[in-house]
Length: 144
Image 1 (cartoon, one colour):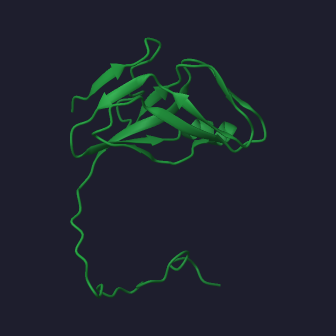
Image 2 (cartoon, one colour):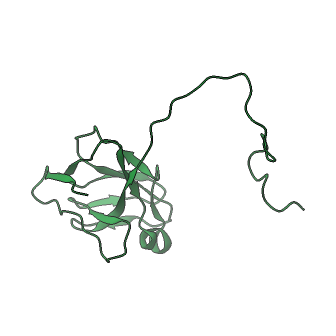
Image 3 (tube, one colour):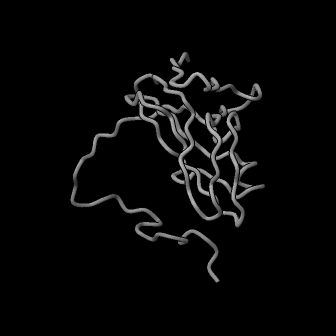
């Protein structure tokens, strides 16, 4: 699949897959910022994309940042729709008790392009019954 990508800022780094089997590619910050402990911030990538219709870009956390620093994508996965042409920005939250410094060029999130279906919603009076039915949160776990 070919995806058009535009540098909105000349400091932007075109994403790449780090290994042959990687599903996600890395987004880099174009600025130096600090996300204070317990707070959130927006990180600019300086990039815009043109995705084919029927595809979305999911912005996901980087596992190393989450494990080592408590940094994750706040609305994970963030969705970039195929009709959006603005700058891709990443909402990060710092779950740690220490401020987190991001330098220009640092990898801050990963992107995965996925195909989706458009649903046709059919209003009805009843839904088919299942073994689970309307049992929600934790209902399939171990009972004790």
